[in-house]
Every structure is written in C-alpha cells, then in structure tokens.
Image (cartoon, rainbow, N blue to C red; front, side, top):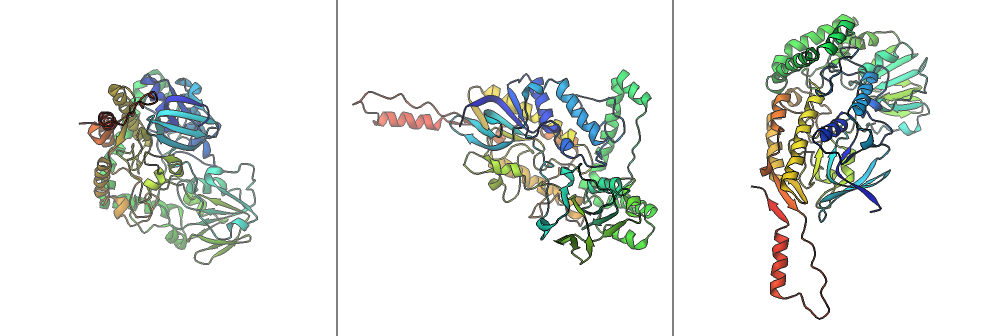
Length: 524
C-alpha cells in the first residue's frame, strides 16, 4: 500500500456508536486511534436524516450517553437538530476532534495475517490498524426499491435520508412511498403545503399517541443543579421499558390490550370507515416497530391526501402505478423505504483472514458473537452488530454495553502482550446464534404475522435482541477467551546464509515446523 498512518484502533463512523467508542477509548487511556468518517461532519444518521419533522421516538433522557447527560433537552422527545447538536457537543467535550478523519470513506480493508493488522484504504489516504471497530450502523445506507420506469421519471426523486432542501414542495403533487418511522413524520410535516399527497402503503403500521411536551425551565434547572435527578429520570424511563420486554419476547398475546388502544387511536382521528379499514393492520402489534405520532392520522384525514393501500409497482412518465392498478400523476416521489440493514454495504469492503469478504461470509445470513465479532475476521468488532437492535427501548443502552465489551477486548490483547490478535471461534459464533434464533421463535417479531425489515431473505430475525438490555449488558460485560483463538505473528524468516551453506537439513526443517506450530496459541 501507499504511505500510511498506523494506529492502535481505527473506528469507522461518527454517529452514536463511533463517537461512543472514541470516548471510551480515551477513558481507557487509548489515544492512538482515528475515527474514519465518510462525510464532512459527525452525527451519523442524525446528520443524514434532516427531513421535515425528523425526531426521535425514544425519550431524550434515555436516548443519550449515561456518561454525557444533557440536562437541557428542550422536549421529552427531541428533534433531529437537537440530537445532532448533542453529538457535536460530545465531540468537543471529550476532545475527539484531533482523532477525526472527515471525508475519509473506507473503500477497502483487508486483514494482513503476517503482520496481524488491518490494511485500510480510504478516500483520504491509507491506514493500518491493530484493531478495527466498525460503527457505520445499520441505518446509514438508504434503500430505494428497483421500480420499473423510475429512471425515466422527469420529476424529482429522493430518499428521506437524502432530503433535497432546495426543492420546493409547495403546491406540488407528491407521492410518499412507505409507512415506516420516517414517513409518519414526513407526511404531517409536508401535508399542509403540498397540492396533493398520495401515500403508497404496502402495509399499515400500528401508531400510538406520542406523549411529547416541552421540558420546563424548572425541570432543566433542577437537572443542572442536582444531576442525580436526571439520572433518576433516565432510570425510570429505562425500568418501564425493561418491564415491557417479556410481552414482546415471551408472551405476545399480552399485547392485545395495547392493540385495542392503538385501534382507539385510529378511530379518534379517522372517521371514514373505508380509510380506517385501510389503516388498521392485520398483524399483532409489536411485530413491526410501534410508531409514535399525534399528527399522522389527522394528516391522512385531510382532503388533499389519498391513501393507496398498495405498494408502488411502476412508473410511466409522470404517472406512478400501484400494485393494485391505481394510477396517479405526480411531480415528486419521496421514498421512505428504509435502509440496507440485513445486507450491510460495508461488508463488501471488508476482506478477512481467508481472503473472502464479510459479505460473502454472511451470504447465508448475518451473524456474530455477542453482536461484536465474526468468525474469520480477527481484531474486527462491530458496534450495533447483528441481533443488537431493539423494538421498544434506546439503542444507546446497547451501544454502551458493546463499548464495555470493546474495552475488555483491548485489555485482553494488552495482557497477552506482543503482537497478538483474537479470532472468534466458528463454534462459539454458531452456538451463540443457535441460542438466539431458538429464543426468537416465540417473540412477536417471528410469531406476530408480519413481514418486517427485521427479517432477512431467509426469514431469520438477525436484527433484534430477544431479551432485556440488562441481560445484554451482562452477556457483554467481558470477553470470554474460551470463545476465541489467540493468534500470534509468525516468527521472523531466518537470515540469508552464505553461499554454499545448506539450510535444508532435517534439523532446520524441524525447527521451522516448530516455529510454524507456535504461530497460533489456543486460549484455554
């Protein structure tokens, strides 16, 4: 490779996962690291998603780092602007700017088995690293379906995560494709200004009221003056959600009461029985993520909104055609169709110990050990990896648990000393995932009767964690070396000998074989 910079740790991504990893590294005394970010600023998904109405559906005091509490959240559910500002604040508070390498998109990275390091090629230069922490996140690469005729559409087309703020929607005929978390925020935000809005709904979502309000000045003062009050508030929010988990993971039938509340929420806002039928899901609530909004249903009831209970099938000129044959003339198409979650694009750029990519390794389904390490990829960890997602609580809790695991992983390498690497044993990865998938069978995500983005092409839920966040924290508190193979750098090649002196005697061959056998240590 070209001239490069060598670091102890290379972190990929500067969203919550990447910045959290950077803070934890500094707190562990590791300062020899870089954060590789493909964009020009930090923020991850909260930088990219700037669409109208963008906000979090997890309470602010729970959707923030425990080590960086924010007493000044303006609302109980904060918007994108305030969350992004919080991440910038974390970056400055913990001195992360010198470690950032902005506009450095990772193009390819490959494991060097001889040097026990990763060779990393980025758009801004080359690096080598002893350890890589991939925190690109599952909501980083937008997914637009392959719609026949879309390339020939003469109007405006963009994804919710790539919002075109220069395009004026006022008076336009707009098609909104999708009914996920982004769409239910976009629809009420743009409905008052567009000429006509047509929502293409392949599957309706369960939507519950959003208990959002401004946080009073007195509350903010109290959290600043007596920080423990903010901690208690966070703990209460966490505890309530922990108590809800068993209904999702063990007893889905208990969700019937919540389902009735959701139906009442539809009935309050939607008086038209035909429209109400279109918007009422046929699957158990919780099978897809429960969405929160006070304005989505009222917006759909407005006279300039049409709901097509079908997905988008094709585009003919300026006409969009639904799967049920409905045709609509539009000026713009907005896709709220999610992200590449179970087919992570960066996996195609990571080449492991056997010369195969992570994508090839995962072609039968993504899986890792404790959501962190994959077989065949030594000293490579993921933050928000397979089966670490949540259906009802804050991902920051899962991230912080994975940071505990990362910190102990680095400590184990330090204890081993010299040039060493840890490689997840295939048997350990297999055992962990068999246990996960067995538990997943009785969850609402598998038994609830829906087809969600949680599931991969084989129908396996490789996205969510089938337990509490407290349980996950216990499972990732420290590294179990029995689940790993310890790799050592190969011994140096013998020095060249003078002409005429042979090195092919039996003794030298025996010595070389012994040296080769010592290149791998097995942890007991």
